[in-house]
View 1 (cartoon, helix red, strand yellow):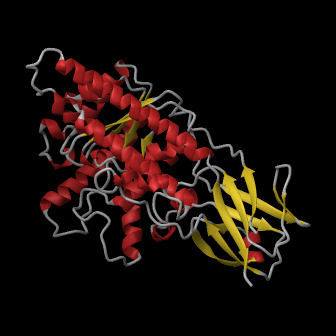
View 2 (cartoon, helix red, strand yellow):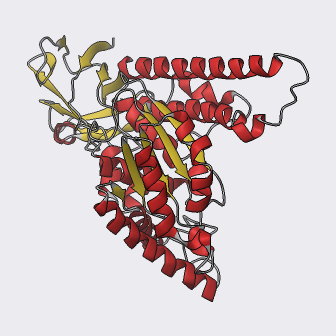
Length: 422
């Protein structure tokens, strides 16, 4: 016999409204690091899971090889045309490769102009992501590499100074990624987190997204749930009612709680020596009142978390400790399969599902970019206009489906199973 208990927990998150609000239209402007659509999607995953009631639009305006000067040249079409309320800006890697004195190397001047134009367009909030580092540990050192590293260091200081002058949030990506690379290397991992020296790998994108969210004031503390056994009833702290349980049979607990954000596995977060990544990816559940020496098997969904004594469960257990990494989008349209998954850790499935839904949405946006459609033939009167209308309706329908999917994801109970060992 399995007894079910539904726990509906209201957890108040630290307000992110200072930067992100209901109704925002968010544009990420940058180079190839942005166009990878990874740290940007993770940021969107976090905001949508924490605020499913908000109506939001996220647009990636990254273009490979771009400098700030390039961003300026396409600002009207790629950014301002979307009427953004919030713009994230991340440039520097390519600017640092140009010779001193060239127009593309004029980082401070070009950023000042870019910020002026965004202010003139009445963009409510600009968030400046300072440039990620150039990893000199890969390959042979050269004068070019050393120059690029020096210039990137200068750009970081420009971001601090100019950002402070304009009262802009400045996200310290350079420092966060540098520390992550050093911690990973110290742990003697075989693979490099930035194999081509320039583009952060998947793990580093998790670091980047976490650093952005932390700077914006999004609550990344660990969600905690307490269940207590009082007499023969399991009760939730702060909630009326309970369920009869003698302690000698399996019990299933359904939780609706603030979502953990496992951008990387807990094992990788610890290798990175990143307390924030560890905290945001955790969900701690404690079962008070269990016999301290009796052993239990705990599962999150269908995935075993571990075997614990009553005393260990009383102290609290991270049910995300064994959760796998994010499931990558599959071939063709199989990327939505994880959304229907009934196996595995349900909270990890949520992040994978939403990331993959956003992947599909972003692929659609990429196919509809202006440079891909402006050369289409207009030989049949009215057809180009009809195609443009179809694009708009298609995108609107996708966004509607996305919002509905997130709302369903948040309210759907997720299960924990506790089974006494015999």
